[in-house]
Length: 240
Image (tube, rainbow, N blue to C red; front, side, top):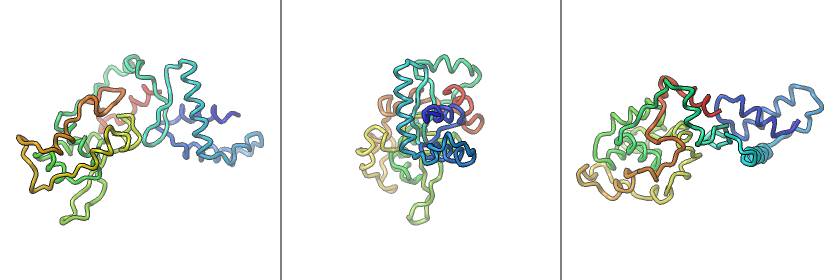
């Protein structure tokens, strides 16, 4: 049995993304438990071999002009419809209306994305206003989570983005964000020296002026699913 076909079946059956390592482990487990000598050649399949097979599938889908492809997310690979077929897929779920984030929430999300893990005080220093409300909104939408505590007086909480954030924007890590290396080197202002909202400092101008060219997504970047009610089901079905 061809490795590419096995991987295609795994990805089609999965309820989310699969990493090269996870697929290799699943294949080795089946070989071990089956006792079928015809598939013994897959007993030592490696993540590297799985990755090569995935690349073959990508080329095959492209050459055949299929309506779907494989996309690599932070947690692995998944089958997704091509962006030009998004409207057709979305028509299957007319009652699923995406909720939108406010500009302040998007600004706060951008700060967290580029400077994670980051404290609430640092976010407020950049924005010049309290972020309590928007931070809770981002956590409720499962876009931001608590990453631990900072080694600072009072041990403030640290915040970082979730896998859902990376999946929504179609990136694998922070390094894939536009101008990531440059913006992560910009020094954040201290909380007691933060500028007011009416007089933004240089960091504000760099960090919160995130427009359509900054975060690329196959979807409208203002549209986020309500992770608290319907986490991923509709998107998983439409992506397949």
